[in-house]
Length: 265
Image (cartoon, rainbow, N blue to C red; front, side, top):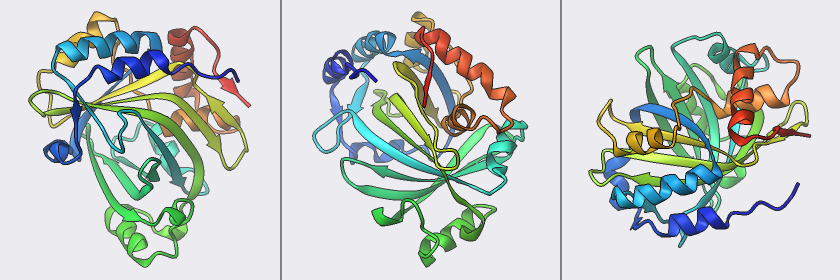
């Protein structure tokens, strides 16, 4: 692959005032409504410029406003969590481990979606060494049993995701915006990898359907809401044997936005 050019995004995000983790304590939104958007890096630079004028602030941790994240998604041998999403089950969940690369902090995270479209996330800290297998950790295993329908022995690492994240907070601190770019996936079952190139996935996280200046900014640049899951997208791209017809439209949408084919190896 050619070396990615991060400079336009890096320069744009540096124009945003900083907000610290401590200041963001009131904007955790672990029980929330999520709206996702799909765009490309060149449009993102324009969105960030308008975000400055609208008073948004960017989370700064470890001296940077763009942080690398790595996640590992877990599922059953039959990929029950993936198929529940594919088959449009309203009440569903995902289980993953995630590490904030700059700090080394790692978590077991359980995301549950109810039939009213609300997402509730629970998480607990784990040692970094348990990212790929927390089954011997009694506390983490008990946490999983308490907050999900699965035990540690029922689920296994399925695939990994990596990306760079920018997190914005509005002036009223009633919403968070996560902006993920340079997404890459690796499937542990098939050995395949996929790279989304200049695609950008934006997620607006609110406690309800409140008014948001960011919605207007995204509309200005014709960035429309889209239903997309990193886990389901990664499975679709890297496992040709999986039932994934419903998600193939998302693949085409990304290629249309970025004007290039997604690279799968």
